[in-house]
Length: 213
Image (tube, rainbow, N blue to C red; front, side, top):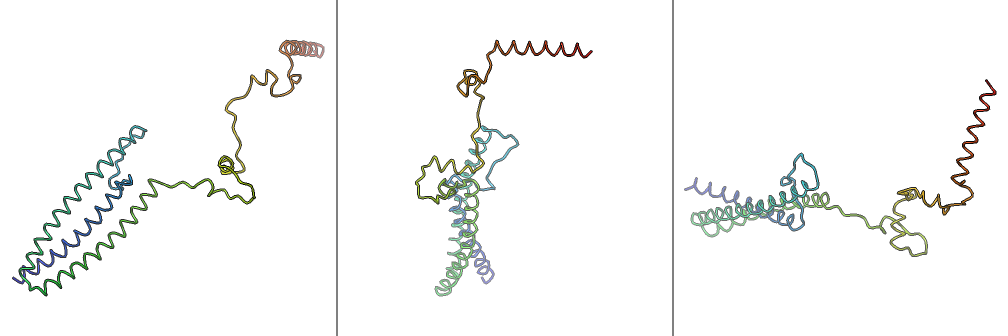
């Protein structure tokens, strides 16, 4: 009887701690599901990297997360049944006062284990949330207005780019240059005059080379 009672007490502490850990783990998984966050051990990876492949990996990982929640619930139900049977067995072997004391000690031990597990799960969730869903800084948080003038969002967005920001021309306005809309038209010679002047320059260069020989 003494051996049986000792084994029952060991199993009671074991099942109570495991039950508390499973409950904290289930809460963590449900929070991840609600915030669309995937734990590291459930993230599906493959050597193919494309837009469609990433969507498939994301859906597969979310499916694994849901299955892990179902498995955790089944394990929690099984552990709760084992814990109940162990408690009933101990209650039949001990007196009421002894059983109340052992039950209280077992509960305190399980709560300590649960608090430690809860702290680790909270840190893990915050780390995953920061990595998978980073928060971007607001425009007004990165630009400080020291003047008395009120600036709109367009000015804040422009100032956020920095002092070295310059707009890039996507194409050279050749048509505007030829039409004379980007400067004085007299600065650009006509096509006929330009062709005749180039021909005249080439002839003068040939004459100069001939006389030097």
